[in-house]
Figure 1 (cartoon, helix red, strand yellow):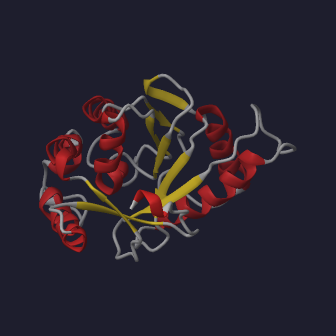
Figure 2 (cartoon, one colour):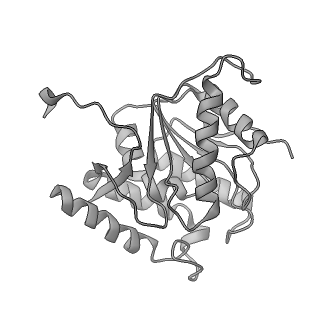
Length: 239
């Protein structure tokens, strides 16, 4: 199977922020509030699903894609794409890394948001390692890729199914209604019975508990956690 980048919503364009999702709905659950806030501020924001979730899903791929389109509209995204890699097999392999690197050159994100490497789901772990390789390849002038080289300026890791040592927190209290609507757009996953700790009608309640915890550390109601592996440059005059 040859991975092919497909646009499912909006138009491929240079993006301020791009979130990589191993499966449909991962971006909404892990980073949706931040993506919505950015879109509302006029930033060009996108999501790229690496798989269609075809092996671990309650809905067929066509239904899940329609849900992705609905969620993208609710979030105000500029673009949403699908790479078509095999569900359950995400790993740092040359064909997958080249496909993702080519996608990065197409939409040219300034900031990339990827799943944290600390996760029980192997596809989330695989996406992290695959992204590291693709970021490197996309910037190489001599890489065997189409398009112009592109260097991602900053990478943030979002929380999946395990605890993380968050060192960046984003107040998302103002967009919780939109965040919840975007997750509920994936009705095939979250309106049926309990399948796992993430595929459950209780997903909103479970995630709100996490967001409340992180918000407590900032003295706000809800905060979305991220981890950066490189120091952030801070201007003290902005404090």
